[in-house]
Image (cartoon, rainbow, N blue to C red; front, side, top):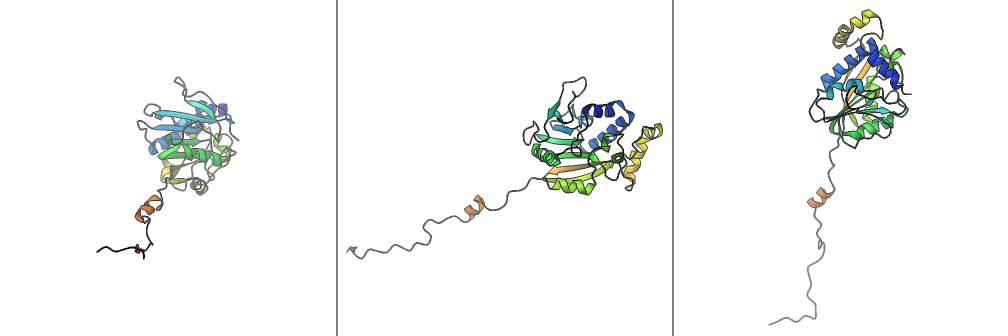
Length: 252
């Protein structure tokens, strides 16, 4: 089940641990997707903490928040771009989105297949999506002190398999939040050190898994009109040469 939007807001905007998590995830996202002029960027679940850097240059930014979670106005001090929606029906045209971030929207959903179908539908050709979920082998999925302790945690292989079955091609995956999910001052002060250490030490599993995918676009198969043109139908093919009528008279 989805967490309440007020609990998510309080964690990310009113706790030190939440701000550490927000910064670490957003920094990795920015390394993957630098803000670009004219892109449409959307987030589903509670992905708005990741979207602020895209407000200035993007053509449009939309924060989609599922009904069971609830919605809050965002961003503060600016025109609202967040909207309440059904998991199975997002208020976006097909193929509209260039970049889509999903955080606290897949692992807590009672119908993850519908979420993935909608994600695939709204992405345009060349579009990319980023799924941010609890890492099954990380510490954050084992603690209910953070939002990543709720819902279904994933391993990279599990999530990639599920994404492929809905028409996505995994491009790369990383883990973040290598610091323990603790409010203790020592861990909060040294969080940047642990994030850097996690990048250099593959065995140091992060608490959150991030998988970037692209939308599969299949090339048209051979056949159809092209095949017909290469083998044009001969209307008179198979008919014999005309035979003179036996009653016909020959001229001089």
